[in-house]
Image 1 (cartoon, rainbow, N blue to C red):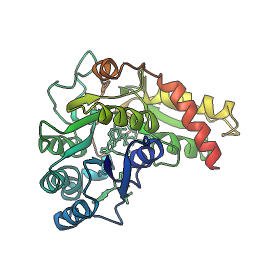
Image 2 (cartoon, rainbow, N blue to C red; image 1 turned 90 degrees about the horizontal axis):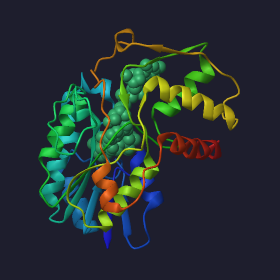
Image 3 (tube, rainbow, N blue to C red; image 1 turned 135 degrees about the vertical axis):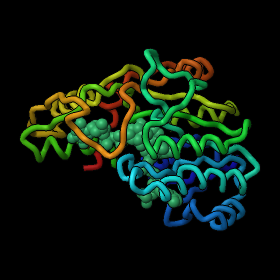
Length: 282
Ligand SMILES: NC(=O)C1=CN([C@@H]2O[C@H](COP(=O)(O)OP(=O)(O)OC[C@H]3O[C@@H](n4cnc5c(N)ncnc54)[C@H](OP(=O)(O)O)[C@@H]3O)[C@@H](O)[C@H]2O)C=CC1
Ligand SMILES: Cc1cn([C@H]2C[C@H](O)[C@@H](COP(=O)(O)OP(=O)(O)O[C@H]3O[C@@H](C)C(=O)[C@@H](O)[C@H]3O)O2)c(=O)[nH]c1=O
């Protein structure tokens, strides 16, 4: 079966290419090959590739920059999804975010829970979800990181090498998720011909502070960091950002796990796997 992976230069796009099962014939396109905001370019790409399934891993993911760049964020996160649906009669697989929720829940978010995004990024991603058809597949995930990508883990490793101390918010709770595990779940859902909305996050919850502490501990243990910087827990109000973020955005992935009949992997174990890959990249 022919699958076109769009956004192949991003961290999830790379992970999808790295984990693609041999049963699928993969073609892929990066931003340089197709600007998703250009409806004609999208039509041409899909016409040339003639895939059965399109996986869209491209997005405007700069959460703070989106607050002052709404048009560009909407073009990629929402209008491009409409362009893809318009150009492709077969299944579209779209990747969604925990940031469509406002974080006021006192239990993990279910796929059909009400969305109430706090940020432009979250709002434009929610608008993108609204373009999907019942036959399409939406996989929402959270706090994604992959080796070689731009993400919280690689930012922390840099700050821990450069700074005398690192201050990290301890009052935003979520589930860090390894891009490779997410990609494997997407391929399994595609293999099962799943449609509708599914959640996939790694098991366990953490604050960004907890995550930073684990990153330093694991990176020190495997020799990826040769010094430790004090990590100071702070409140969100003491780390002002352009975008508001949900204080609690844990996703309930149990329906996904039940359908796939596979287990959860704890985020800390997947962090170790990612750091091993990061070390191998040098
Ligand atoms: N990162 C995270 O924590 C989370 C991500 N997600 C979702 O997962 C998906 C993948 O994210 P992730 O891999 O982390 O993000 P990345 O930022 O690593 O990758 C996104 C890719 O999209 C490309 N892109 C941006 N604009 C366009 C455009 N106009 N046309 C074509 N390509 C474009 C980027 O290219 P370039 O680099 O050249 O700009 C980049 O290669 C997204 O839908 C995101 O919303 C969901 C939850 C958490
Ligand atoms: C770099 C840094 C960030 N922070 C805070 C800011 C923020 O509240 C939190 C995470 O920061 P980041 O900007 O790295 O991550 P952020 O871009 O908010 O991550 C989000 O990205 C989008 C794409 C998603 O879909 C979400 O699931 C989520 O992963 O940590 C600190 O407290 N100290 C620091 O030194």
